[in-house]
Amino acid sequence: MSTNQVVPSREESTGGISKKGLKSGTVGLLGAVVIGVSCIAPAYTLTAGLGPTVSEVGVQLPAIFLVGFIPMILVALGYRELNNAMPDSGTSFTWATRAFGPWVGWMGGWGLIAATIIVLSNLAAVAVDFFYLMLAQVTGNDSLAELTTNLPLNILTTCVFIAAACWISYRGLETTKTFQYVLVGFQLLVLGWFSVAAFIHVGAGTAFDATPITAEWFNPFAVESFSSFAAGVSLSIFVYWGWDVTLTMNEETRNPDKTPGRAATVTVFVIVLIYMMVALAVLAYAGVGEGELGAGNPDNQESIFAVLAGPVMGPFAILMSLSILSSSAASLQSTFVSPARTLLAMGHYRALPRRFGSISPVHKSPGYATIAAAVAAAGFYTVTRLLSENALWDTITALGLMICFYYGITALACVWFFRAEAFSSLRSFALKFLAPLTGAVILFVMFLKTAVDSMDPDYGSGSSLGGVGLVFILGTGVIALGAVLMLVMYRRNPGYFRGETLRKGVAERTAGK
Image 1 (cartoon, helix red, strand yellow):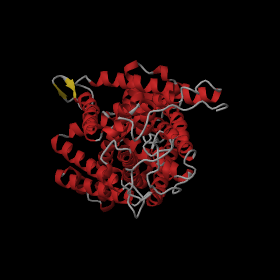
Image 2 (cartoon, rainbow, N blue to C red):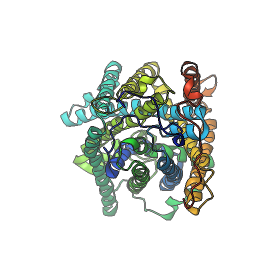
Image 3 (cartoon, one colour):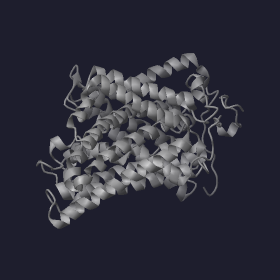
Image 4 (cartoon, one colour):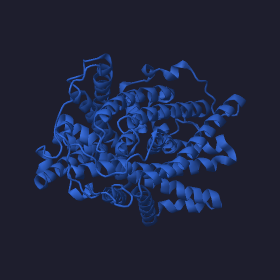
């Protein structure tokens, strides 16, 4: 089959699932974990997420990170079982289609694509902010840091970052993997340095507000209210998001039915260890008060490391700026993997125009889909940034809705697809039924709670339309846009929606599994 051929042709038992021409055997377990960690972007995520989470739950930050870890690992186990049975780069789109049919499958794919396109624009914007901050620190010219506030220059630089990341991703996973080893290794080294330095300050009595670690920090029931608890968990779900990139590479990994699922599980465990280490270091050094360096100070919460890196790391604070720049740049590049391969699968199975299913004949990568994702991310950033900075950041806040939406659909797809064998063994019951069902319930509860809370005009930036919070309007609006596009595609390419290219099915019961 030629690299541009996208007509599915497989035996009946697969429901139409077929290869797409991607280069197989490119990534092993370590490479997949590195790309997974990169996509989550711990340095970038922590500097942006620690402050807001502390504002909601205070010293119970470690407890909330552990609670947020629970649905992630439960859903990851369901993803692993789906991948074992159906390794396909479409992941959420393909698996939800096989379990529930084309309409739910299309919306599951849309949730993933919309979330990643939005976060791509945000990652590029953060990379630009820290790029100019780095230039100011290196040259000693503070005015260079202010260049990011020049709107035309900011948009232009952001688009250049997106284009550079697109170029690396277009060249395939071999180039991606090499790029990620360096940047991920660097940011983890700096986060470790920061944490050790913070604990040294605490031990030496030179910390800003030395706070002893107690068991109460790990008690989620100590959070003052359910609303604060829900807000904290919603934020913690966001900071874990991105591990599923390891599954979208399944057609390009070695041992594709096993390695991606193992990589997803390992990635989630690695990330929770990193988060716990840094969270404990920040709380122990700075406390949760509203003092000059306190983690509870609203002025510090937009970028906690920008405030603490200097006092904690001294003259090496510039390494933290470089780390966050490398984290956002690395994640910008690795995040392209998910939407590009989901778009590829949707084009391959005719849920989108067939050109999305084309493969670069040179690099064996989803060339057209990668470029389309880059254009969409650049266009989204440009339009929202020109309209209102509040609209841009409120859309980022609304990401939690989309993440819970498509993760929840995929977890339920695992439960439903394996329903015939769910009670055939203890392993099947635990991994194919109980774990993904529990994860899905948690995520949909968080989806509903966040949707209700975000209707409040004070949620997010405080912007509203007609008395309804802008976060709710943007979050539900993006999902509704997907439904409209789905109807357009039904009119243009009805074959997928009739089950002609990818068919609904159920896993056959297998004894002992």
